[in-house]
Image (tube, rainbow, N blue to C red):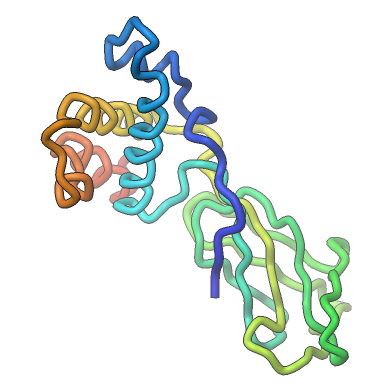
Length: 186
């Protein structure tokens, strides 16, 4: 089971100034709404591509101890902690020196206990093992960033005509860029 703990602001990826330049906005009258549209564009692209663009902290839990844990989220940039509920049902941290972390670019991250370390004895509960990790695209591909700006422009230009259904649909150019990303071509 995975739950989101925190998410960075959209301005860590696209600044207000950069968004305003793309939208050709020179005044300050829309400074409050532009970050909202930027975040909506990012979230829509994240959902379509099944990635986390912005730095996001998750906790993923496992019910049984193992020598290896695969993280279902992508791309993982850091494993922050590995904890377990001991037989007294007390949350205990596994030392980072007791496990190795594999953070591949194109597949799931892995946390593996070192050879001389046995899996802990845990209290019987669905979240017996809890791994806290961060996901993000640290160096955004230019085309993916362009997709966010294009979707932002679509939201901004059509804000009066947007319906709830329209807000869930990608601009066709953005969809093509995202399809290229999903196919591993960018």
